[in-house]
Amino acid sequence: MGRPLKRRVALLVMLAALLAGGAVAAMAATSSGTHRRAGAHRGAHLGVAPDIVTAAGYLGVPPARLARELRAGSGHTLAQIAVASGRTEAGLIAAIVAARRARLAAGADRLESRVTSEVRRAHFGSDVGALRAYLGVTPARLRALRVPGTTLAKIADSLPGKSAAGLIAALVAAGEARLERALSAGTLTGAEAAKRRAALTSRVTRRVDRPLRAPRHTG
Image 1: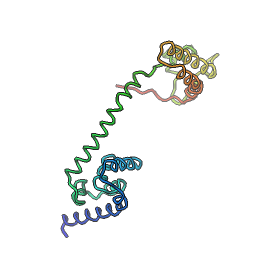
Image 2: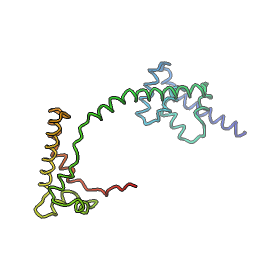
Image 3: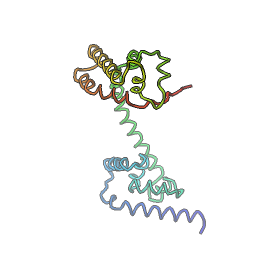
Image 4: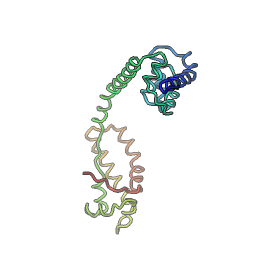
């Protein structure tokens, strides 16, 4: 049996397996866009790439099964599978292009709201100033003390007259001062400020107790 014929037989065997696995789904499916969108949701839950989900919808087979067959390394292309199943390469391309355009349009619809949220987000600055002020060290000394693996709590406890509890109190006070400034500036509502204030002590404590990582160098 020649190699082209063997590849053709292998392709038909794979197609038969795909169609057999999708027989039940095909009986319940319709040719509407609703069915294809539902297939996309199912495929997303299974971790299948969106283009494979679209191709499976066009071919009328389960997305997960199509993905498994492609990962098996048969060497067949989606175009070959489409033709063998009675579809066309052009039709498959059109389906995938349409699905990608729909995803881009959906992302564009959400873009303005995401940008608006970012523009309106209040920026509260850094705790570095309050950190240095409480510890009573220079920027260079603080950098030297920030050894990877240690914590801000240990640094505070190692300095005369300082403590982890005192550092937490200083950072919480600095955070509360920033919240008050944000309230006065109108960048936070009273409810938002109250929510942040309620979580402030626990957030600061976690930061003070978190092991420090090595600084990232750029350039």
